[in-house]
Length: 232
Image 1 (cartoon, rainbow, N blue to C red):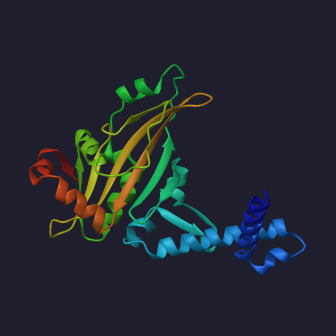
Image 2 (cartoon, rainbow, N blue to C red):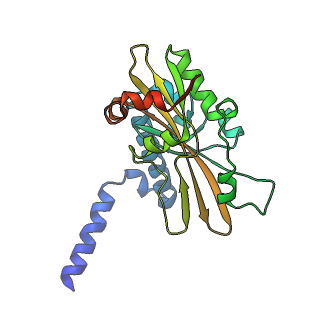
Image 3 (cartoon, one colour):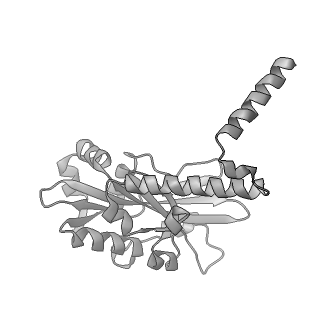
């Protein structure tokens, strides 16, 4: 028993040692929240500074209040998208798929889903940025998108009450003038059951030399040609 108490006291002292002196103020709970918020902001700033493709990230992502908040660009927010995740190799957006027909289920929606690059707000942002920096964007058929999705650890994780679709939308690849892969845009869908059955579309912008070399090494040149839909 004494040993257990000693361990617990030591753990509390170690926790106190890493907190700033501000926690000794009259309102320690408020000070803790402020400290945690600043640490989170600091981590966001460090992550952003380490981005291997800031120009691409900036086309989608906005850091607010010196890192205390983060969001997507206003146009994407207005289109119903929300920031799901951002790391050094991937930015993920999500949007709930709405339908005017309540009797439709996610499965029936996906069976009738027809991708269209010309009306996709995420693709519009992506293509504009890539072409604006002198590169080429090509769209690829959904079956190829499913193959590309298996190359990466996407933040669309299957669960006990979920269903996923990785090969139902177009894939986009940014190519340099030298014929190297610069970035990718993939989409996936996931339905989940909570208070009701919901369907979300996830858009993953993939960048960085590790990710782009990976797709070059894993996909045959003939497959890029076979599944190409068109140049945008």
